Image (cartoon, rainbow, N blue to C red):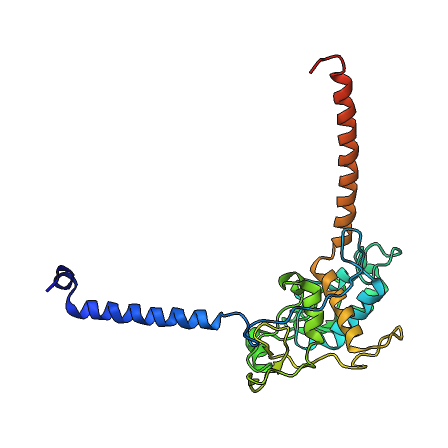
Length: 283
């Protein structure tokens, strides 16, 4: 008997051998699943869209943001919350319903009307009872479901993600989200069987998504008369979500541009100062 066998015992060595063999099989299986080229594993590259707010000088399209909020309100809010936003956020500088006549969004009549569309549970009152009231600009966006368990139970076990920063949380951001929302038309590959309760979408990792197609012709009737094609609905709601993920983006860009101008002027002044101070010194 070898020294290892005497020290560990035959049973222990056999158990370690079987464990090592199992780990090797598991590693091989993992490598096989990760092999590139699997249609069910590799999401399709998102379509590139032109976004007016993209780039260092881009600004949000206010009309698109307002339509996007309407799409969220009438379509997305049934399942997806936006817990990071209050109604008054919609009326802040740079927001979709910003009004210079009402620098305080709490006084904006449009924001008041949008908030009042929702019923909010409040209390307790002087008798210790809870009560319902119309929403106020200071209220956060209402939750789609009371808790995650209820959300999963209503969506076949899948938890709808919060949309507050969804654009920042997804690779390719706006392009990915817009492509996903309009990407249900393609048929799955012949070797892929779509699970019951799932839908094929090549832009979603794995290809199978629990969310049914939501954007179709005239699902929303726009207040401004814009034709509500699926592509238009997707573009508008993604614009709104991009603003929600970074509501101070325009102010940040303006500040960055002003800082660059300041640094440029400072660099020029420093260069002339250097030439003046050292003009009589030989180098």
